[in-house]
Image (cartoon, rainbow, N blue to C red; front, side):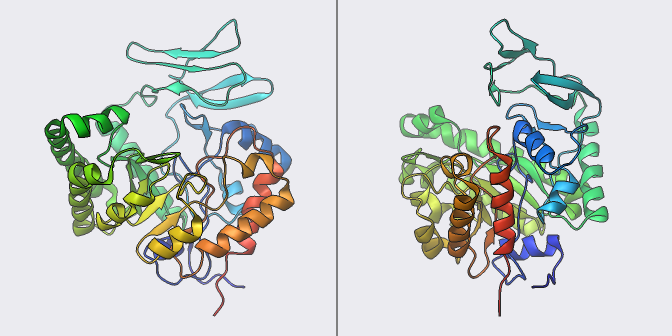
Length: 379
């Protein structure tokens, strides 16, 4: 089979549910489609690649920046937009793991082997032997708003001009909050409306600044709101339709009316009952497609919603399969899922959320190689 599209064209067309030469593959464009720095170092060693310049891209989940040699090895069509840290240093979380981290990242090792990072306003902890921090990470760039915006703009332009990869800007609201907000939707809907109206105006203003500065180099933005838990939606469909959907719809309309930027919605959990609203609001792709959650059967999702939205993820179950199956079982599992999601375009391959730190490298190789081997469309 022969590729006839660039990576950027391929992803844009797949998200728009248009014909493509092969199914696009994502490896780390978003902080829910990436890989733990522990698994990443193991993967690079397994492939015989150097481990001297591994960079931590997300200080909370301890995700690695996926380097170009790995992107090329697995035929990935995407690239993380977030720029490198202005200043870095080495951090040794344990054993032989050494990674470049931002200079401001200064956790302290505790007697019990855990790590704690404290600032004036926040605190994070990683237990001994853990793979990520619990808590909210403080700013690690240490830049003014204008300096930060300029840094991201330079990175977006670099990706656009020096590669053919698809990239996205993360960090916009999906107009749904945490479980406290879900409770407030039932007990105090007026205040939720007020919060979302204010948030909408703030998000539109922020998007306009980004779009004016670097919109021609950015292919997508992410709107974030975890609408589901393992067993079902985190709120009732009626309350979502009343309190969240109208603001998401207005934001999506603004983005689509003022740019060619696509909208990637990140929402974990069981969201089948909310999918009609996610689609009607104008989002272009949904991620991570948590197929292990209740009522998230891949065949039903594709049959019921595949003509209206792109599924970005769902290509390998990370809760059970990716870390526990043998490589041959991974190959069978991935092939079956690709055969469900791939037909008719509208699918970007990625596992369900991030590759965790204890996933064997041979399973990662089996997953991505199988995805590519089964990615081409035939006439």
